[in-house]
Length: 572
Image (cartoon, rainbow, N blue to C red):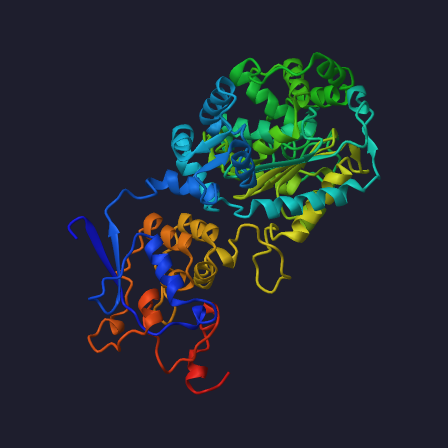
């Protein structure tokens, strides 16, 4: 006995969970298969377990067995699919090092198609925290697969919208097919999903305006920027030659305001710090920019009192930079990361680096909410209630603060200049999910909240049912989520008691070796008194605590909760 550890689970009355199909010989076989024995001198259920290394060494191994469903090896494609189901992509910069190592290993050794826990720890040990958050469903959207299926449905509904016309006043925009339609999203945790034509580049046009404003506030300050700029919606078309009562552009989301903001950046940096757009797009934008030149000269003419342009600004050079900014090409996938950066308070979700100040982000989202959708801004704020910015190329940049960013793109525009499909998608998104700014008020109609973890993830009843049915996969998920694996029902039975009673060897192994459940500490004091009745042949082999005689037997562990008092008085 010197090399053995004695664990005692006190016997008692056999619960009804196993009364239908379990036998004494079955329970004894289970215990012997687990290297356990029953010394004849002890009247209770005694387990002997040799000292040995745990099956799980740290979080990495628990994570591995959760992904592999308890198997010792997992195919690489299966792991990739499991990773994508959480919302993480293999192209995520945070996973670049480990994915490069895995790619190099598979290329150098084509026979490497399976990962064991040692290889898993080697390749992904540096990303354990990120992966554990993903598989523990601790991201902002825990059930990302279900959420993605809803996005697919909304995408399909919007795709059927065929109204609207492609902008043709800029030749490069007129070349796009009206059938193009794509949606990409990125959450504040870096979960990403795309559907449709999301890899085709398109020029940002007015979608660049909130980004330029945010950079200006980040570079200078709110007071400095708004010395030249108002904050109110204009109530006019975005390209009108009109200023407010202080001879300032109404806001940075109209062309006049965006030109002034660009001049601030140009004066400070002297050169543009964006990647240059394609020459053809830039030339097309500049050659059709007569209205913007007119706005520029109109602003330059206002020299009495407070000038519109900052000191040292060159109007022509500022317009040149403005045309370049509007001509920057981007895909929906890249645009969603930008939107998610705004949703995340200025920190890029996939690099975890701060790129904008919180002040800049707050001001930008406020102006996007009130002025971002041209003459439809009030309607959009009323029905959708989220910050957004549209462009004549068909893009809609949508921000769900503290949750995610979305980039929609479809060239056909309505009479105001917004994407028909993009507007429809945003409206349907808020109709389905409680993302509207005021959906958290009481007595509103019930909507889905993708940020909430389902009750099956936190319920003690479901933990007991997993043990009752031998669902080791669910037990692994519960353990990885940090749930207490020694929780008890009102009868003071733990998952280990129930799994042992039902003869689920794998579940018992997992609870003992992986979760390190302590059978000694799990015994209810009431069942450790020396006045215990002698065990029956069956209870000696199962080892569960004796149940109270005043409570009726029930076939399911979850049904006992909440009915104890009624059954004491004989009611059902």
